[in-house]
Image (cartoon, rainbow, N blue to C red):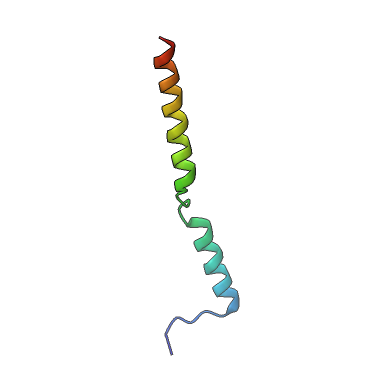
Length: 49
């Protein structure tokens, strides 16, 4: 058996900690939508000139 075994209370605390400190998930669809919106805005400005 391991030297540092956690009881259920300790496991719950560790899980909660890791969920809190997990980096924000990278959303590819949202990123593409943002880039597309910027591109369309730039394109619209060029055609207005």
